[in-house]
Image (tube, rainbow, N blue to C red; front, top):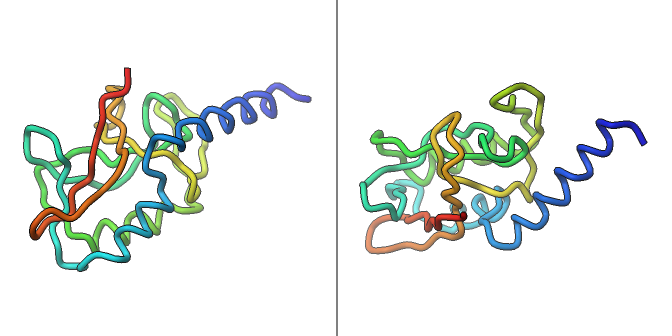
Length: 137
């Protein structure tokens, strides 16, 4: 086994474990497809914010982050971004190419930051689609 294959296998095993408690990219798409496309999307954080365009997560480059932003986003816009991310290759913070897939775990961290804020679920509250987060230490 070459070194890259070993690293890839280790990354895949870690991502599978994280997918047990994270919302995955495929699950996010499924939940968004059930919601009203015009509904605003927010995080459940103390400071009101919305997810922005996805990028590779700094903590695990093969995971995906939707960085918090003050710019509002709708379910339809986030659904488009999430669907576009499936099968797409993102560059890791310090290099390397990482293809995202339906089982990719999701985070809510700014680019280049590994603050451990996992996206663990979603629910509709009133007229908003809320992404549920949890600090993972």
